[in-house]
Length: 172
Ligand code: AMP
Image 1 (cartoon, protein in one colour):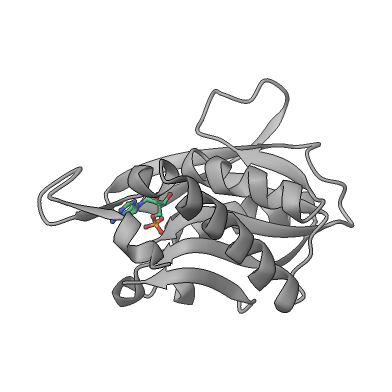
Image 2 (cartoon, rainbow, N blue to C red):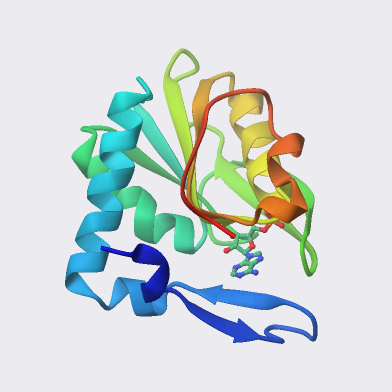
């Protein structure tokens, strides 16, 4: 099945010049959702990316990261927007394709010797995934790699990431 056909392009959202890749139409398709998670899990296993924890980035990284963690028998750790996590956090500022933001992780979320896979729906400029990698590094856990449903190739976001395996299902 063609996953790309389940993703809807919304031009000029959230601002002029951006083509927003809307995954809600993929999520609502039962077979598409199942194929996405199963394919991500198989690609991780084939690439020997079998982590102790999936770190998912708010909020669409939660949607794909949690079922992927379940399939890989891993735990799930949320990286969240500021002010959402209740216990002591590490915090980092980063640049988006459109704007600036910060992200937080619980300081005690991951044992320092564990292996982590970072998951989000989409990599654009790479700023979000890079900031998440920096947060995981602050904890001292080992990053095995990254998994995205969509990679926007032209923005070369992968160049911002440490040289580790990167899985994607779709390239634009
Ligand atoms: P970046 O930090 O530039 O790699 O941006 C990645 C984050 O922004 C991801 O969490 C995406 O969900 C979101 N994002 C950036 N660009 C787009 C886009 N064109 N369509 C949908 N989501 C996007």
